[in-house]
Every structure is written in C-alpha cells, then in structure tokens.
Length: 592
Image (cartoon, rainbow, N blue to C red):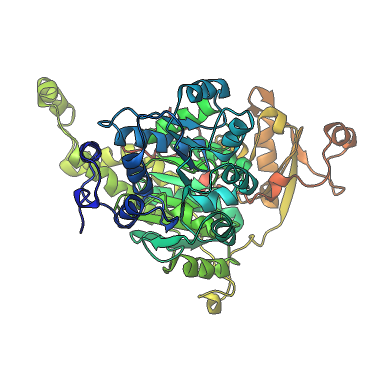
C-alpha cells in the first residue's frame, strides 16, 4: 500500500493531513491523486460516499494552485449547501500549513451580497451549488475564464435533482483548456451525456464495480403491510438500543409526519427537509452530530452532504423511485472503514424492486423478520443491564450515604431487589409490548411467495369517524396517533385504518366494534386547546349537514395525506400519557 508521501504531495499538505489523522490513502485516493498530479487528462471517478472523494480531488488541486494569484482557478460543484460547506471546511483543514488560500463556499439560503463581497476580494477555489453559481455568473461576479479545474462532485445526484441545464450553463462558461473531474457513485445515462459533451477522452477509474455499494454495508429488508410500516420502524429501533440512524422518506410531508410521530412516542428524533430554513437545518444537524438525536428523518435532497461518520443504520421507509438513489442512501453508513446496516421496509409487492437493487449494488439483501414484542423486551432489558454494569460509581459521593441506603433495602433479598430494580425501568416497556401483533407478511411473487400470503387489513368491518379538527389545527397523521395514544379511555389493541386529514376536518377509520368507545373518548378530549367533536361519517361521504363546511374549506375527495401510507395499529402504539418506554441516545438521552 502506498503512503501519502509516495503520492508526491507537498510537505506542508502532508503535515496538515497527518494532523487530521490521515494515515494511508483510500483506494480512490491512491488512484486519483497521482493522475491529477501527473496529467491534464479529464477523469471520471466512480466512488461511493465515504470513500475519501474530497481528499482525492482536493489534495492534488491544492497542491497545484497558484497562491500568489487571487483569480478563481478551481470550481467544485455539488448538489447541496451542506456538502458545499463540508468540502470548503475540508479544504481549509488541508491548507492549514500552506500559503494562504481563499476557499469560498457559495450556496442558496445565505446572503448573496456577502458572497459577492468575498468574491471581489478574490478566491482561488469556489465550492458551490449549481443554482447559486449560475446566479453569480449572470451577475458577472463569478468569473471563470481562468479556471483550470472543474470538479463535479456527486454528479449523478446533481442531475437527479434537476441541475442539468445549470451544469450545461456553467461548463459552457469555462475554458476548453480546463481539466474536468467527474465524481459519481453511479454511472447513469445523464452522467454519460455530461462526460460525452464536456470531457475529452476521459480516463475512468473506480474504487469498485460501477454502482456497487460499500463493501462493509449489510443490506436487510422487512416485508410488512403498508399500515404497519411505522410500527415496524419502531420495532427495528427498539431492537437496536444504540441505534444512530437516518430514516429516508420520499416527501417533505411524510418526513414531517414520521418525525412528529416518533417524537410523540418518546424517541429522540427530528426531521430534515426542504421546508426548513437554513438556521433550522443547522440546529437539527448540530443536535444530530452531538448525538442528542437518535434518529434523523430526512428526504434525499436534505440529507446530501451530511458529514457524519458514525451512523449505524440507514432505514429506507420507502424504496426510492429512482433505484440508484438507494446507493447514495446506504452510503451514509459504513463510512471511513466502519461497518454499517442498510434496511428497507417494503410492501408485499416490492420483491421485484429488491431483486433490482441487488443487481445495482452487486450484493444480496437478507430478508429479516420484524421482531416480536418479547424479543424487543429481552434485547432492551439486557442492554439496560449492560449499561448498569458499565456505570462508573462515584465512591466519594456515595459512601457517606451507603449505610442509610443499605438499611432501606435490608428487608429485601438479593433476588427481590433485582426484580424491583428491573421492574422500575421495564414495567412500562412490558405494558407497551403486551399482546403486540405479528407485523410480518409475505412477499407476493417473491422468494417466499409459495408459502402463501397473509396480512392485509383485519377481517372485521371498519367505521369512519368525522373529526372537527384538521390541518389548520396543526393536525397530521402522526400527531393524531400520538394524541390518541394519550387517551386512556381507548383500550389496547384497536386497529386503525386510513387517516384522511383535510384543512378543517378529518376522517378516521377504526374497527366498527370499537367505534363508540373511540368516539366517546375523543368527544371528551381537547386537542391543542380545542374541544374535539367526533361523530359517524354518513354514507354520502360526509357527516350530516356538513356540505357547507366542505365548500368553505375547498375540500373535495380524498386528501393526498390519506394516501401517504401512514396508518397505525394501536396494538403497539397504545399508551397512557408518558407510558412509552424510553429509548435513549448514547449521550443525549430522552428528548426534552
């Protein structure tokens, strides 16, 4: 294995990366750095997230930049502002001992005036998102006539996000003498088009097979019915007490709903999506990096460029529409040589997509069973006991109190004391998972199709309730389930069907035999300070006398939220207020 010294980097760069903790180059660095130092040929590099791509293109570019000139000599394009900031920070660390280089990140969501002011002072390296770079070019503030290196980082993702025209525009404003470096996890048709249109006989290198997932990531999938996906997610989380995960959802709305439901159920969770301001995104990521959050629920776009190396699990709440996006998602774990787990929660008809994903990443998926409640309880119990055994004791503080403590426990045997100690922590957990349902179902047309199909909606009839609260009351599927969890009048084990949230009202499907019980419990409650009214929905599709309400609200037909797949069973979710067993992060503990 080569060393960084043997690659031909300057001593001051070697000193900086040694201080960072770099020891030996990764495979992509070992192949890329000599190429960029010794030739001007264009380059296509296929490498997964977490393989050391930033250093692969950053170190040789920094090694050759003319620090005496303040003209922009290199531009790095990337899909998100988070990744632009990350790359700029990495470049600053690489140049700690070199002659001063100005590295400027430019991206939307921040003051363009401040970025223009910095450009006017001069920046040898600009790292930016395509939209903001186009804006600065149009304003004639970013000048690219002296560009020597153009780096397209995560090119496939930029194209997936609709930046094709922006990339064409930017590349057309750079000199033909530039060296173009294209880094991508997958080789899509659009990436090939970019290489054909803007690269001259590029050399192609790879740290693995095309589109292949990271070697140290294990891939699992769970097959459940749509309404049970959220319960399966919670079981998976509870089965992994030290989980530190990203949960990927398709839409901003679904991301917010799942996050709200997890928080309502007592998990340390928050969300990241495009509706958040930059300040909100920074605050969420700050808490996540400090492990004050155990689970981050995110859309694909929002999660690009997350610089977090210790993520244990990536959970696909939905398989992405573009299957190659799975490669990017799973690449958030198993970084920096560490092992990781990627999980897909799928429906009975999704076996074909799993087979396609196996071909894309070149690795098999392991079909797993959603654990039973008893297995979760046992896992959590022994995890708790292990933490107790590992707890450091402050002898100085405790010794003066030990005599009184011993006297209080004098009438208890060792076995009785252990039982009480464990019960104090786990009575709520035992109650929570009592009589929990089997969430597993069978694939249709998949590996186990010959075993038959089970699952689906229970055989009993459903009744639909009309509720007088809706989106204007800050209600969504997650907050409604969490609200109902806190109503002790609703018994354990009730099956919930579709939830349809309209602007001014909502519809809720419940088992017909529990209709009156749920209706009475809701009618005796208040949601966010407003008295709740619940009554049966009439056969005409609305409650009696509500045509005027429908016309005034603009509602017509089924809300898209009703089709989001967010449904629940109270068999696992039922709790009295505050009774959800705590799931603690490794340091941050329960969400406050």
